Image (cartoon, rainbow over all chains, first blue to last red; front, side, top):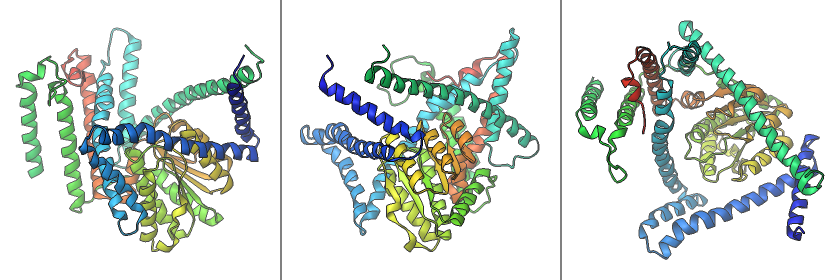
Amino acid sequence: MIPLSETIGIWLGAALTLCVLSFLYKDNPFFKFAEHLFVGISAGYWATLEYYNMFLPNLWEPLTQQGRLLLLVPFALGILLFSRFTKKFSWLSRWPMALVIGIYAGIAILGYMQGDLFPQIHANLRPLVTDNWLTSFNNILLTLGVITGLLYFFFSKEHKGALGGAAKVGIWFLMISFGASFGYTVMSRMSLLIGRVLFLLKDWLHLVN
Amino acid sequence: MKVISFIRVLFFFLYFLLIASPLSFAQEDLSQSWFNPHRVNMLIFLIFFFAIIIYFIDRAKKGKSLFIRRIAGLDAIEEAVGRATEMGKPVLFIPGIEDIDQIQTVAAMIILGNVAKMVAAYDTPLFVPICRPMVVPVAEERVKEGYASAGRPDAYNRDNVRYISDEQFAYAAGVQGIMLRDRPAANLMFGSFFAESLMLAETGFLTGAIQVAGTANIHQLPFFVVACDYTIIGEELFASSAYLSKEPKLLGSLKGSDLTKAIIIGILALGAILETLGITQFTRWFFIE
């Protein structure tokens, strides 16, 4: 026996799914209702989530229960964000912003270098001639694709002459990779749709097992 | 000359640090250490990269001309705003769904400032729906500055920069609603996008708006390429912000990253030749533990 609360949840989910899918016909009051409900609930949900998952455990409780006074600094910076509501002191809100952008930019540089740049350079340094012709072909293609792709993103010179030709080859490599990526992602979206249709047919209508 | 001498000294220092230091090859537990000798390769690259950027920023600040090629998608922004003006419809600017700590959002904010300046000059309404609360004040500032620099501070409407929702698909639904009901004639999508990219681009396409998009999220680029009129690909997004703002810092960074790219191309070519000859030490230098 399914509990009543779960049944109500399934019916609500099914009704809202149909409301959203009605957009395939055109914009209509059912879609508008689902859209406004989704936006409103999510805004409230996120505010509550941030309060309980971020503000209380990371700031308020360590500050009031453990007496970690150093946390007064981020607390004060957080308060400064609200200075935007006064015309006279609104400039103060730029300080925490600058701090956030600066810190994250610094962290991101190291992260990208460690996680992307170095591993990618390392993975791309391959022998162009090997015992296996297919591996050799793959390695040449990879090296050519990476170098011409990089040349496409070279902004200091006009794409003319040899550089223009190489950049054109680079954009072909990019477009082919986009095509492959497109097909792959469309497949994953189809699986999302299948999941939703299964919810309607199985959980709601019990038409399939 | 001073900068070159400095770089030369720095290289000698790092060379000795790498080669002469016995710590470079130590295998002890480094979790509590301030310095990880296994990452010296990253340090060298980072210092070199910073030195190049600082050098070019310095050049840009001194007023030396730094050439950047025109990016095709940028002309499309003006074309899109012009079309919206002719039709008497608003322009919609979507700055992605990530927070202000992400570099793509920062680049989007710089482009937003220029778009605001453009729409203010044409007296066209500009809507900016936002996904992250921290982005709202920055977007407000950029739009306000844009209107002020066009000589139209009175035309700035704070309500047009709107927070929608932190939730990815709720935000997408809200923006779709704006596209369908306010019918903007130009949709400009710059920043970091994820699964919502196709939903937004496809809805914009259905409304008949001219669409220009730019992101460095490679998995979303295919959707923008198929559904938008113009797409700014990957690093072109950052180049666009430098090109439009003409800020010495951004121009210098762009020039610096161009030179770094040239060096990386050289590394790739040299590495491929050395690997073909069976010399693998060079490749190992780029290995991160």
